[in-house]
Image 1 (cartoon, rainbow, N blue to C red):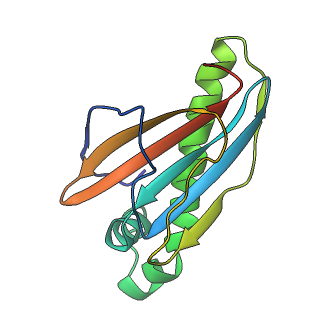
Image 2: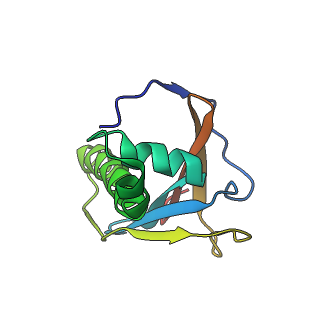
Length: 135
């Protein structure tokens, strides 16, 4: 969708969610519950918003939330497909996007989690998966 080369890093299974300026989250519920978050810097979110249609800078700035939410929605859809193939039944929510500074998010319950780091050019991106119901 964004026509960029993305390098995959080594997943981590402990620790807090990475710090980011833009966090797009899609929840899921069914036989399992949890959420997927895409965590990126404002600069990475801007590049993601600008890439699909080669939008002008001012237009891309207005679409940062939509683009980050859509990316998180596609990631959650992939997670849902993978889990469905393993016998789970899940529905996903609409994306929620938070933009700002000096904030962090964390799962507050006993959950299983994984953080997948990625590089897109100079930008670090993280996908955070939290699942409750399985260990």
